[in-house]
Amino acid sequence: MRAGFGISTNTDPAAAVREAVASAGVAEPSLAFVSCTVAHDPEAVAKAFENELKGAPMHGVTSSGVLLESSGPKAGVGCLLFSDCALPTAFAATGAEAASELKSKCKDSDVKAVIMSTTPGAEEGVIKSIVETFGPNVAVYGGTAADNELNGSWRVLTNTGAFAEGVSLVAVTEQGGVKMGASMIGPYKPTDKVATATSAEGRKVMTINDKPAADWVKDWLGDDVKDQYENGGLVLPQTAQKPIGIKQESGGWISCHLAGLNTDKSVDFFTPVNQGDVLTVMESGDGPATGYAATLSEAYDVAKSSADLSDPKAGVLFYCGGMAIAVGDNLSGALTSDSFKSKVDGLPMLGMTVFGEQATLGGFDPSAAGKAENVQRNLSLGMLLFE
Image (cartoon, rainbow, N blue to C red; front, side, top):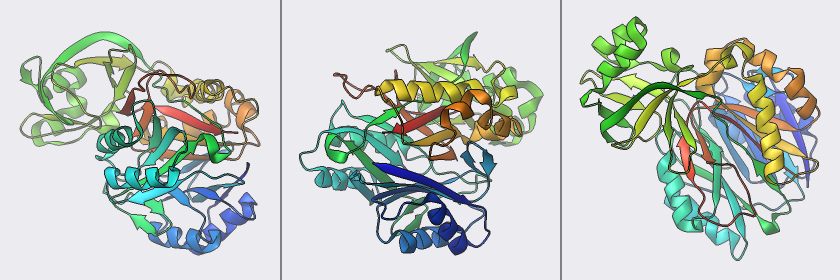
């Protein structure tokens, strides 16, 4: 397997794609991970990639504000191109359809993991469909399409265009010619502030400790959310450094992002919350001030060791969009920090800021037997490494 990465900040979509593909330097790609910010027209970008890549399977999403590389964040168009590998891909309107199509392409292949992309709100349904189709041992990793203003302009990028809804999948198989390691880290510690979701459905929590959920959030966050408490509204900026953790039976944590407060005093999350879940306020420490530089380095190390990789040839970085917005200019310092850059400098790597992260709790071990605990989470940072 060979890989190359290219990025362009050219404002013209077709020119940006040409420059990114040329910079990647892979003559006959067999797979492409692609991304752009919504400052470029995603449909024009998808069509331009299809023209330049001459039919190579394509998997990607739009990124919030910037793309990420070891030299820092850039607003533009990027691609990570592979050759000499054969990883099956699929795109469909729903998770069930996409998983079925992918399964038909894998035939008798031993599928170790599935990489997914979709749009906000669909993630847990897609995970369920993947597990139902490929069995409980398959590991699922991915990042959700994002935009700059939470206005729904996010897109899934495919060979047939850019879609406001839909599911793109890539299967990592024994026969694909690629080894993959993966990580997804929520860099937080639990505090003593806990409460119980006493009434919840899907991503909406109606009551916490048997009182209106928004009352608990207002007591916790105070005047920072006074307007949203009174009138309803998003609370993403106020909570981007203050995740809620939900501990699982396995001992792993799902880090969750509060999305918004509603006029009926319910609270929306960016992950599912079950009735009876214990909600723990998490502490981010000095992570925001450093751009989570230590977590970037740890994400690389964990991904590399998870599949016992010796010399990774390519990487995909998922950085929560809420975290990226919250750390601001510190993001650049984290990407260029010695601890991270020393590991990825020269590595073809496409980094995206996403609006949801999918992962296997407890880490990815492609040789392990037993049920994988695949979840939708937020405010997390992880990597896929390929060899």
